[in-house]
Image (cartoon, rainbow, N blue to C red; front, side, top):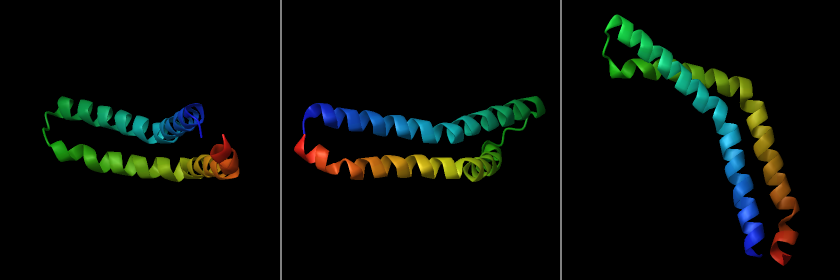
Length: 90
């Protein structure tokens, strides 16, 4: 297996990680920002207050996008396994 194949697989893997984690990360960022603004407005300085809304929002996103995430990861794994012989010979 030459270096170009390894770099290409690593690039595809990193892109897949970014793509499937983006909905959860963006949701966490938005919910955290909203809760922080509300804490600032109400002068509540409780650091653990953001945990529960973020947790609930991420669970909802996983329920909405879970099928898509699993399909993307499965397709990538199938592609790697299918081309395994090529990777060894290359």
